[in-house]
Length: 162
Image (cartoon, rainbow, N blue to C red):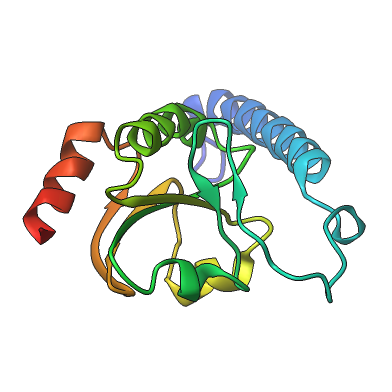
């Protein structure tokens, strides 16, 4: 065996790298295809000059956008869930937020912001992962939870502000 011949494990390692590469490519292609299917199109939303109004979810939370966000959270305590339709953890967090909206109706505001439709608002608050829940008191951020957060933890943050 001369010094220029490859060692025995090299061909096996080469095959392993090839399979890992092929699997990675397949995952990337699948991801791109599914993200493109779910990406909202500009023409689907309301016209740019339409007035921003708060829409209530079936669970009682209010959808907020850049046009009505500041006014909606200007006074009092509010829980704001930054989410997206395609996000699995957001789907788990959604019923928790809806339950909070029903249980706390009239006491605290509960709202949702769709980061796909309100990217500028998400950037303004530095939202990098979803779900992210902000606790806002009198227009200022007083707490932040990233990831799935249970109702007791959120309410603990709210209670500390009262």
